[in-house]
Length: 445
Ligand SMILES: NC(=O)c1ccc[n+]([C@@H]2O[C@H](COP(=O)([O-])OP(=O)(O)OC[C@H]3O[C@@H](n4cnc5c(N)ncnc54)[C@H](O)[C@@H]3O)[C@@H](O)[C@H]2O)c1
Image 1 (spheres, rainbow, N blue to C red):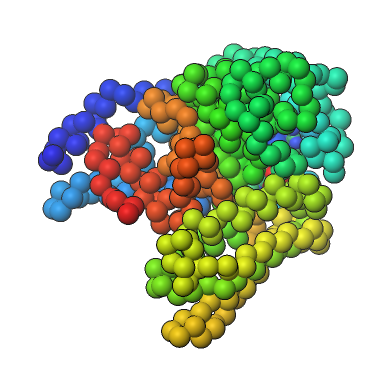
Image 2: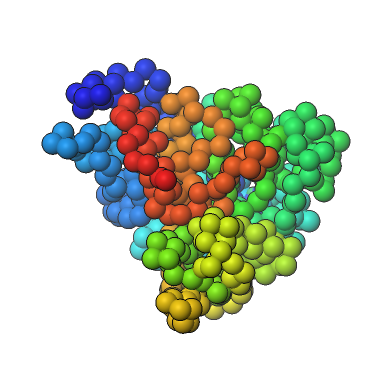
């Protein structure tokens, strides 16, 4: 197929709707990540900051080949909502508006918050669908009182409809950037089908139905794509896949891939590409924000641990290279240490071996800022999942794995997640090309 034809297709791609009208981004959790994200977008809109880290705003993708090749920004390939067309909403357990939340989080300096104080102050969180058993360390009072799981769903649906109407939004995306819930293991009798999930919600099954599932269910039924930014099980169950298919809505998750896991999924390919061996990988970090406080609770940390551990398994695969990757020891720790607040420090000790099994070590010390890394991811995920919906894509959006620590995949059909950062990047680029009417022309195997 000639480049000219691809170009014609992209201009007339009938499958993709334009990004007309306002996009409502409704975020569950108005904490450090969300307040940093919203403040940043508002500052960029005023020309007072740069959206560094956003692939949509900076990356370019090659389209066409040979002498016809060109490098285009995402917006030149597909219709993506402009930042000026975004309206923000949120739910939180605490009543602080986005301005107070940004000040409390202390991620950004006052000088980077004050210019958008009025807009931030107007973003007041709606009452949270919350159950303290899922996050014991939180004790805010901005919560829906005495509601069953099904009543939570109904209230959240009402919240979404009201927000959409009041703000004149053409479309809504719902994203979870709230605390990590305790680990809810997959239970086939509850999570295996949509009818079972709905029955459990109606029976107010508080053990198997996490509050996050109520948000996801409400979003999908209201025709809004859903993103899971924490490691919660939420949409990673067949019942939600069935709902996404029924409502023709895209879903993405889980867990933003920001600091240590980004390093891991970018560094592990160096080891496997050069056929070096791995005997152990120890990752630990200290952080002192509210996220760290919640994760200090063992049941909440376990959810995160499962997510973080999964990264190496599909990159350094023992079955494919038994001499190199059998029985490596992989350990992940998170330590709550208040003085550091959002400025996480991570240490990775990697024990590798080379020629004739001689051992070597690699040490990585990443002094990052958690929410500064997460904010552009949240922006890209929201805009790209809205794009996916307009392109008629629904169900698990594997092309968004690039942004996620523990990418969703159909485990009931033994589908393997892609964790390798550079393979994920190819999946992302190919999906953008395809949605823009260009040929997906990079292979990942
Ligand atoms: N920052 C990163 O680098 C990063 C990376 C991956 C994942 N995450 C995840 O993103 C999430 C947000 O991180 P953060 O640093 O902003 O945390 P945070 O503690 O500052 O904010 C989370 C907010 O969620 C609220 N909340 C909890 N349960 C809720 C519910 N049921 N409904 C509504 N609100 C609820 C809390 O009150 C809190 O204000 C966490 O789950 C974290 O694990 C963050």
